[in-house]
Image (cartoon, rainbow, N blue to C red; front, side, top):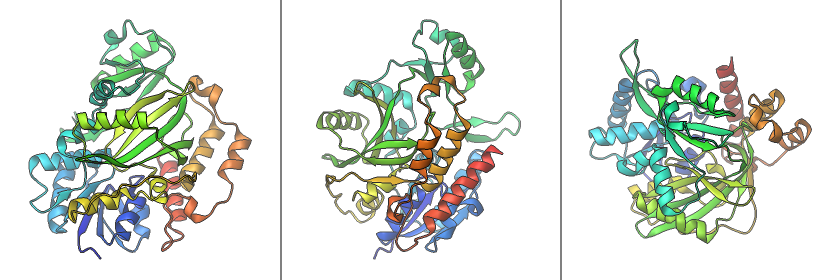
Length: 404
């Protein structure tokens, strides 16, 4: 039984329950920081302690001070960021020397963590490593797309998180910028000029296909314990994280290119490479996620317990297992996100670019509402059998509150 205490956050991150189950099963004591413990499903787990900190979207410096103080007050042996905002915070605290001398960051080193937050740098490294990339340009204004002719297209922010100054309060806050899809150059130019302060943006043709994820653990000798998933359904059919996914075998050629990509940015620890496999079979590189990913449940059900491996490796100097996946195809579903998927299908597409491939209502009802065993769902643990239902209620409630 470990005596180490680990600080995790943000507690409301999609991956939080599965990460906490992984660390709990490995014997770690857990404390989580959150924006609001009242709406966080982790409050239903008796082994968790939740502590509110200022939201970084409102007051970044107050949040940094609170997390730094929490590390000291809780005598945390390690801190594991669970989403892009917390990865930004931990990276900043490392650079400021505010994690203390005994708290180990259970994340990538700051230099490579910056790449995980900078999609422009990812694109350049992926291209060099030979990964397939859609045609991509970096744009900050309409002038940068004067010769762009590939439509429909998407403009997505190059920064996963960025510190900006609020003009009214003069306080810094963290921001996550939006993306847009466009049918014409006029629409694209107008949008870029309207969002110039949020740039730069990556402009790419809108590629259709099936979302895939490639996972593993990068160590000094290369990558071990490769695994993969393929999306069965997305929460939002227009593009979002999965609500259901299944295991997928990663081919050796793709592994070699991903390993070269990770080596070029100095990555160590767990990783997730997001791909989109086109109709012709090309695995298009989308992005690197540098923190625990949403479909951690599938990796854990398949025997790849990446969060506890990271903690054991960093805190107890244990070697990382090198495992391979079995031959059986596993599928897991997130109950709350499946219900939200159903709501999106009922509403229909807002953007005509997605109309042709929008899911049909009756087949979606049959797929989403089919019964399944508890272990076939995200966030199920045999010691806390009803937690995945409580988490689904919290997920649906938080979604509806944001839409209200």
